[in-house]
Length: 456
Image (cartoon, rainbow, N blue to C red):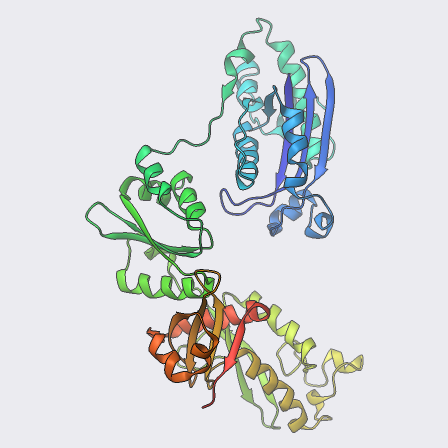
């Protein structure tokens, strides 16, 4: 029995993709005897180029079943079957990745119709599914959708079965696809790593650190390093001897510790990736009429930003949201270039700061609310986040807008008492990167963070 399938995914980083659609046709060697087709909620973002290619977007998948809800059906329909796919290595890897997330070891034999076509129909200019089936006169509909591509693969497979007159070529092409084999040395390293949030350090045999990273699941992330096939991962696999780690509980603490550790150690395999993460920032200035204006600009270390962004698009998206949330003027936030009123004023949703109809004092009060919410440049506060164990909390101390360090505590009075808090804080350097990390994290996780304002 064969299970002929096609999978559409979110795209993205290797081994981090998610399934968005799957189609499986069970084939007895003569005809289709069962089928399973379903959209799948991948619980992660879909890359824009994939949306353009497949037409599948997040809105379509909002009410679709998650993978764990269809996993049993996939196991059942592929049981005792050989998986058949066009570029089977990809589809098989994606399935194994999804099942591995569920803690299930999924293993099947497979056949690749690309490899079979090259043997049974040689010398064609292209073996991509679309070009191949067109050259063979096989009709295909719903290209780049799982069902359409899987049906095309069914028809192609029927043709390949007919062409294998000796009935030996297909049999010889069946292969077992075990998980990517990890060297025993790397398996031994992974065996001692936990699935916790923290910072990890990869060492050579002489103890030198060659790579530092952070993850919400250290064990899973190291597994990705050890199974990825890109050039950097292969070099790491060759040179790593041990991996040590610091559990942090909090992703913010992990980000801060990672940044400091990379600056201190300058690991060889971090250098190419450690260009400035935060290229743009939000600044304010007061115009000739006394109104506070906001502007997204390239980050400048000589200026104090309100908050920072990884790129201009992220900054513009933020400005659009806060303009609506704080009832600000599109012209004064840089969203609408005009010498007269902004668009929102024409539809009566702007109070008229753009043409001086609203008092500068009233308008600026709302801008200052935004600045106070997203900036800590003059604040004395403690950011309280997750700890390493259930009854522990992490504390990040900010004094007069300066990051002082971080620590852990178990009791509330330790956080509220500044003298006690300072005694448990490990001092860390305040620099542009730490400011970026903290501002960005607060902006994205404000609902889940506890922020305590301290008396000056």
